[in-house]
Length: 233
Image 1 (cartoon, rainbow, N blue to C red):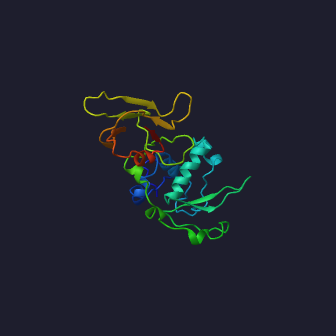
Image 2: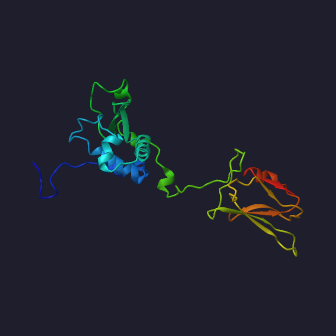
Image 3: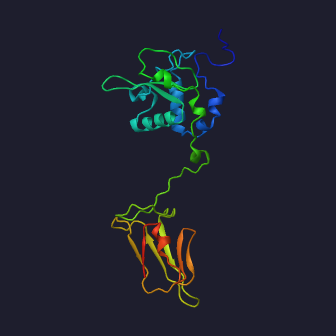
């Protein structure tokens, strides 16, 4: 019996609090969360069709999912996070993939791929590793400086998009500072920084995103080696 006095009439999507409060759900992107709701809309009241849910662009185009790439990334995220399970692998030209959500039991169906019933894991999202970077708000992409022709890992480029290489000279000597764009106007990454005939006085440090050269007795090559850059002196 419908209790229309407490809410608008019609079917609704029931997402358990254990799902919404899970670390895996909190680690999802907003796009993946939106897709999860749009997939859950297909569920019958008792989940009799869980395992036959669609997630194709053709199915979701009318719901505003116009980018195949965005849809694919969100779907992959839901699968990786344990919320979505593929029961049937789609094949072109006209066989769509089928999916099930994991907070409900998988309904039986003879058309599932071999092994789907056995490998379905109820509540898989409880065991999935959450996106820790997104949970901590640290998922901002950092673009590294990778010199041309090199494959070694590079130090991150400061947010201003440039690296300053400073040579700190002995007391009483003027300090020259060289600033170079990470990508010159010609469009090629810098391979070598030249500091010719500059005496250096006390160690090599990385502070505030700047390279500071000091102490002529200290070999700077190991420190610069981690960036893939060379120091000529």
